[in-house]
Image 1 (cartoon, protein in one colour):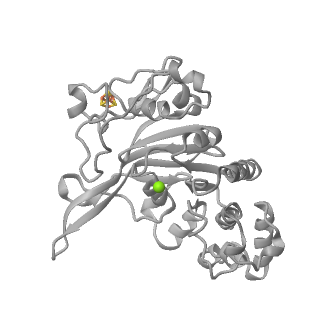
Image 2: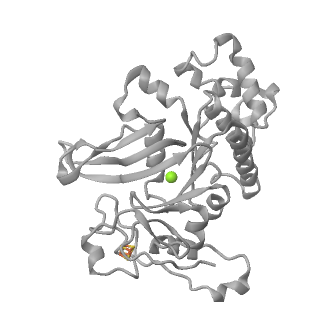
Image 3: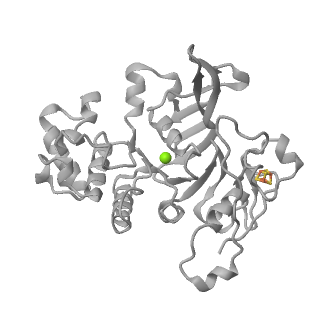
Length: 343
Ligand code: SF4
Ligand code: MG
């Protein structure tokens, strides 16, 4: 099949410690049962407010977080979740096999100002992955490989001995992308890759990612809170709320025919460039705070802020399943999924 990555019921619960004995008194359910597929060469966008678990999900996918435990009923137990790369469940691997599998999925970090070591040259930074995976490129060829990578991301290969502070923000993100490509991965997980950049520079980095995708056949998971950037780059989009996936579908399904009230609220909050259009839209204003992921609401965890909530929503958690959207169907975790066109 063309599924390159499959997440099945992924969890990441952080223990909350209290008292002098540092006893575990609860868990922050940062990622709480997330499933999706990523296809070869596509971009899956992930959106949601800060604290919804998108960054934790990114770190789980690339192995920066030790995953796969859930804490149902206060007891820690292995999660039933699986994470498959090319049909291999990496949660069952360890040691060299685990590292080998992880080589194919690399991360681009949010902040190009802090994710690069200021004391290292660009050449050393881009070559960092070779310390863990020395067999990918022989030592004698690494300098040439690094220069090739710098060229690939639009940097001058002759600047290999410069330090991060000698580059602009956009150039630093290019350095991070070059490092992410060093091991010839199949998947890049991009966590807010342009959020820290000036708007004018954002488009350049997004264009670079699109060009690299076309040239190298990469699949992306593109995490951002900026809905218009995600719409631009994504083939499919997942909307996260409090550690779960609220809605998942093709870009046009999510943006033109959302059926989940949370997605509808997020989209209605996007500013309209043309002020004459503004009156024609009914803006949905979400009331109430985002509940704590340590104590998510029962049933549908959006029910405390949902204007369509009914009794059932308080007791029964809606599953992320295909539901009609007016022109077809796509996945939505709402008992009363109903299309609402967003201008
Ligand atoms: Fe709202 Fe109920 Fe749908 Fe949850 S299941 S989004 S509370 S209507
Ligand atoms: Mg984040």
